[in-house]
Image 1 (cartoon, helix red, strand yellow):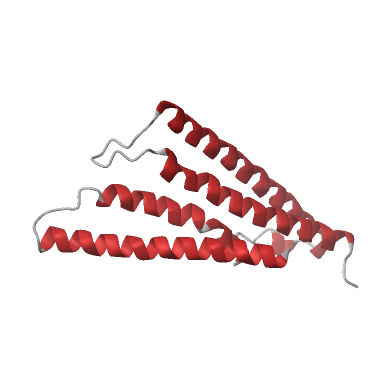
Image 2 (image 1 turned 180 degrees about the vertical axis):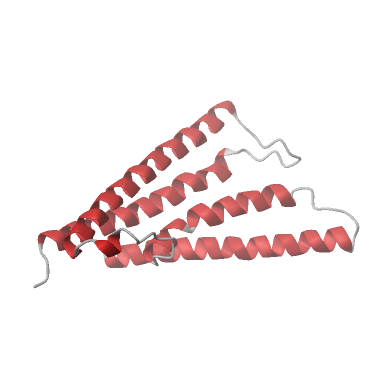
Length: 162
């Protein structure tokens, strides 16, 4: 299971990393064309926005595995180890429920866009179901990681080390 989660984290990290690199190149190209060539890449804002959404959602699983998200610990510092473990289980269930909702909403969002043939209202006219898919994919990756952590935490609660 650990190896599978590590692979998900690597895919998450690399996807977000390449999108960050692509965004850097896009911004540099926009700056060059705007200030040197005195024109603009008409699609830079749109593609940049899609890339930021991709960075955010595809990077979620890596962020979770590395525990790089913001944690508020003023409550858990004041409770016993056993209570801390149960709070962890409860919060993992809540996180799983939220990501399940995000997966479902992402699916509905993409399905609706596909059904009505929704396209961006820009010169590119990109079918929006494609950039919208990263929401569900990113949520699915982090959901898998959360469930794996939940299973590990529940097992540790049932079989505490002595």
